[in-house]
Image 1 (cartoon, helix red, strand yellow):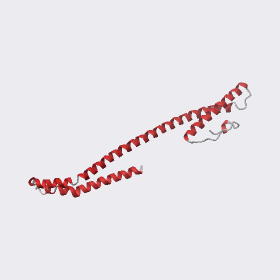
Image 2 (cartoon, one colour):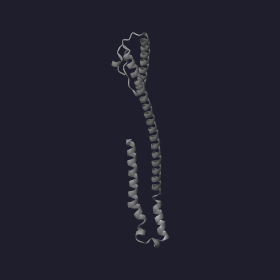
Image 3 (cartoon, one colour):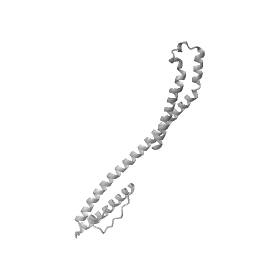
Image 4 (cartoon, one colour):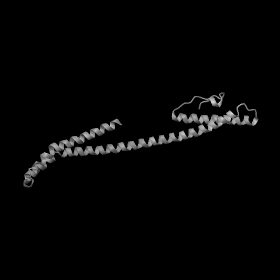
Length: 171
């Protein structure tokens, strides 16, 4: 980003130098007779001299025209780069939003399973014990999914042991 400002300042400096040079040296030298109201009486020899004087700066005109073209091309390239960068940033933000929503949904499902496990703590019913086993497997699957999503964000969570009660486990 800093180099863009350097190039912009350099371009403004070159254009300003050209304008100062043109306004203070070339323009008065060429148009001095116009200020003295003698232009209508200028001879063709005088006009030829003015033409030759102006032709001396043709290369300078070509130089600044080339610099302007380079400036336009550089601006187009910077704009293309900026649009590509913006598209990548948008795609990253979209993916992060999608993963965050997914993480919130899985977290809510995990909280539901944990509350069911807390309610059936110390049960003796065979049906509840069977359901408890299913809920434990479901909890492990949700925890694995949360770990996978967090790895995509760059976070690594510690493993959760099964011997801790659900209320004390960290997700």
